[in-house]
Image (cartoon, rainbow, N blue to C red):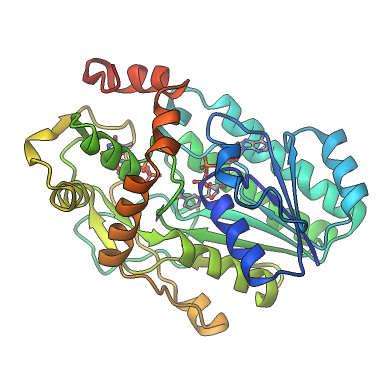
Length: 343
Ligand code: NAD
Ligand code: TYD
């Protein structure tokens, strides 16, 4: 079996590559990644010499290169993680989100049609459902919840999902979609809440919390997400959407305080900053379908997962320190201004 994994130099894609190479030592795994600011080749160094692994630096929007790769490799399965993934950057400049997340998805699916595949899997997000009110803890996103996006990021991911379903209906392409809640774990780019707070806390820098910190996210350890996608590409029903989430809802402020406690840092580092524009209040997934159909359940409890994650950031300082000293520093200064954490 030959699997093309796009966006595999990023957070979830790299964890998925490690999972697949370990679990299926006879599969050929090809990573196609543009290496944007969020992609990091050093993340993949432990697998670069694996004879069943190939890395190709390319843009999923580059039709010619994508087709050339399909021609050479004739993949059975394509799993598309490649995306612009940060809401705050999408608010700053939506253009590249539309290009990569929508156009890139159509280029990949055109290649799938041309060369034939057994499965195209689109890695989507719970953010396509919009948000839920804080005062209705009884409500959850199911696969039937209407698409109702808030940010240019979520709108671009929802547009891609619609295209995927259209390619299934119109061309009979064999597709599946997964919509997962917020992930955390190793190799998470330190512009996202959990790794940013860990990195700042370790450097005794202010911990920026948007608004009042009351927004709720449903956190899932990245390995559990990878296991769910593995089940979907092998056993999921074609043309179906599967929600993935672990019923682990937490307020942002509680996560930040927990990280302070784990690292023995004072809560006085917490700094409330201007709220995100259009900030979604609460995400909460109902994972009944994937549990009933594929037997998936999250295995890592948040209390254990966050400890493992913090330990990883402590033991892999060079990985994230290199990132926060590079181009990312300009973004940080634009976003957090005089918090100026990395000077
Ligand atoms: P990430 O930003 O860490 O990684 C994205 C990767 O895609 C990077 O390696 C980047 O170089 C690559 N990439 C970007 N544009 C590309 C292009 N045009 N061509 C080829 N490669 C390109 O993202 P992530 O957090 O790992 O998310 C992966 C996927 O999972 C995304 O589709 C995202 O929408 C989805 N998702 C993420 C979360 C989360 O909590 N992080 C939750 C649900 C769904
Ligand atoms: P993020 O990790 O960007 O994921 P998403 O917006 O896709 O859920 O943010 C998670 C939550 O943390 C979100 O409610 C925004 C908030 N947040 C902060 O309060 N401070 C920060 O510096 C960042 C990056 C996020």
